[in-house]
Amino acid sequence: MKNKTVYCWLSVAVLLFTAGQNLCAAENPPVTVRLWADRPAASENELPPGKRKDIHCIGGITDPKIVVYPAGRTDAPAPAVMVCPGGAYGVLAIDLEGTEVAEWLNSIGFTAVVLKYTVPKNRDGALQDAQRAMGLIRLHSKEWNVDPNRLGVMGFSAGGHLSARLSTTCETRSYPAVDDADQLSCRPDFTMLIYPAYLGDETYKLAEEIVVTTNTPPAFIIQTQDDNPHINSSITYYLALKKQKVPAEIHLFSSGGHGYGLRPSEKPVSRWSELGATWLRNTVSNTKP
Image (cartoon, rainbow, N blue to C red):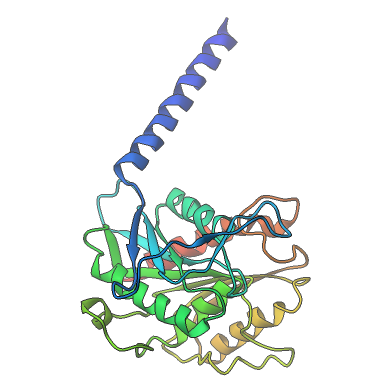
């Protein structure tokens, strides 16, 4: 009887917790914002399953957007992270490296903003989208209960390249100003790169479009040794940060490959989110609110 009573109380607790989560989600539904009002409104293409049947990808994005996932009930403005999914600049792995990441960020007290940037094969367009999005987030920070001084960027694979490019080209916009959002800084306060691509070659030479300076935001990098050829990207970017004395933290695992997102596996790298959560909390606590 005692065990049944305990089980009943546990069941009630789980139901209450789930109800609380659902209520919070209902009170703070995601907000979708178009980046460029002068472009024709359009929907992204839902793509059929590719080689990996467990990943949902979208493509043909000509009307880029941000989707804001609020942190939930907070007395003070929440820190936020803009998430840039990967997909070789051809598609976006929107669940693996987008919505699932947003859910994790929400769970640790961060507002998440998933960037649906221009694809396919338009790196400069994607950079314009990222710069524009950062300004819009800061412009709407009060409305979305976001701390504009604790706003970072996080990217996976090609999204990691985009995040690093945003972090190193934030002095000026790469397009003519549109409105008040473009008068605000597009510099991320911190950067998270998860198996980033295209940042460096086999000689550890930094890609020419990535110019690290003393003003480059602090960074957190996750990489596996068996992720060829992308391992050089992570190491090259880290060494460039080190040369400029920019605070950086890199975690290199022996195996795990590429494209694992936050999904669990037997590989130690699948627990990188624990390291990431600790780094995020320490970083935002040291950033002026």
